Image (cartoon, rainbow, N blue to C red; front, side, top):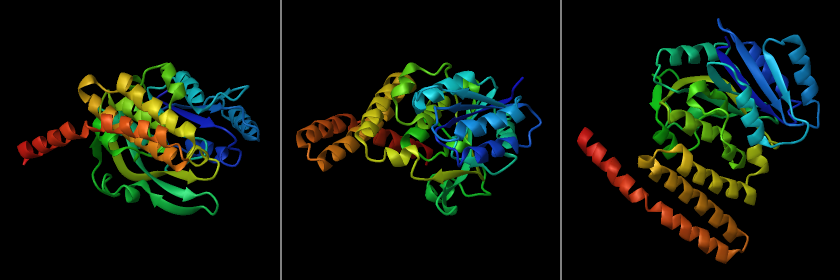
Length: 311
């Protein structure tokens, strides 16, 4: 039985995908793994490289070739559906793993904690232009993440909701049972599939962070974050995503966290509209932001009460 399924999405990653695959093949595991690679109809040599590896390692490399461009979310949904492992690891085609013990350490951590749903770790960001290090997530989010060498730290779903994006995608190892499969159809319309998976998985149990750099996160001009940096589609997808979190991801008692997240997305879109001279639309979305942002008030008092009783 497959212990870990690695799911990887690629699109025009000719320069990167071999490095991603090699990092998986280098894993020192005493358990079977598979790598599901979904190629979203790349127009460069990505598919040829994947096919060569699949021919050499047919028991590990299992490609999915889309004959037309279906988009990242649909590709992700189909890759996830193809995973058969007890655990599912995420690795995008332009990132790679640098620690051959990564999967073993994460599996051991989750097997020792059967009530935990997700295991994550530190990663280094680097500039693809010259391979220079930018920062590690531990350095960038030092107010959240422990330093290398410190004890592991637990994060709940509400911690992730409160802090936002601080988890490297290439670090995620989830229990397969913590994610609905197939992924819901609303997944196709959201902006950040990795953030959604983090919230969905930790609804079933907390996440354990290992303060050890075991992956590299590539910064380059072709990445989704770069190409959609200030596009209107990005803001609309984020608003839709927040509404789906309200309806499907958070428990009713925790809905205020989804409301605050939605308020932030309305606020971001309002600023975008104002920068393009669309002032009446800006006012509408700014008002929506104020409407949902009031949830910060009860949340503030809830935290103050918890601090008072634990002091």
